[in-house]
Image (tube, rainbow, N blue to C red; front, side):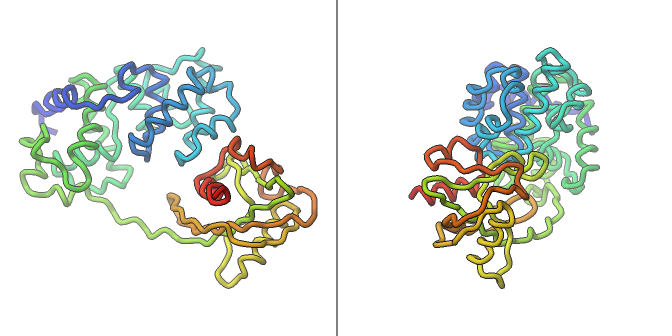
Length: 353
């Protein structure tokens, strides 16, 4: 990597154009940590209200560690990628038990905490503690590959590691926090995936992609395999004024969240018959499906679903958990006290209409 003045130009630009964000005004390690976890796979505008609510509920790492996981998931509800909330809660316990409530202040020690991969550890170490460790995320990869005309496939871990190593001597010569945040900010605001604003880029004169007209071609990403699609049917089971919900086991996908019983079915099956059979198999409860409440679609990282929610009437049987770690009849007026995944929230909204 050539030694030019581009890092200084980047930092100068960042000082002039950085967005005012709640975790930037006073970069406490706890706030930096929470914000960086929330910002993974999530837009800044979406994160800001969640950040404020989360900090109000858990003002310090001790509060987060002492909280019930269900309460943490409730504050995370709708933000998605719930393993992040699990890791935050678990790591908070480690910080309190082993580090007297203070986040470790080095990249290597941070890496030992649950949920601290290369990106999170580098972000917290550099922004909160000033350690010269480069952050490598999607924005940084885009800026880097365009700046240096790099045609390596950025979806490969070895390429991300290479960029990390090539930026290491660069960040050692400048203010680490400003450099990392500047790279990410430039990628978010100027060096965008589509229609980058090259005319306003402080690195334009050094940029190989701009010089050679390659901004649309970089970064190189291998095509993802098509995500499979599944049809899902669930039952909103009524027993007088109460409905039946089940909590997913903590170790699996969407662990700790509550849902309406049901599952994947094939188009050859009668959806109503499937719901009745699936609800009984999962819960021990016999039901009669009566009508469809709604149909919603949702995409997860590795698959997509179309979910149909049925209004069901309880006809007998006792609660016998099979696929859930807990089953519960709850009053509809108290349904919003439980954390649900996004599809279930859409079902709840449809029932309330």
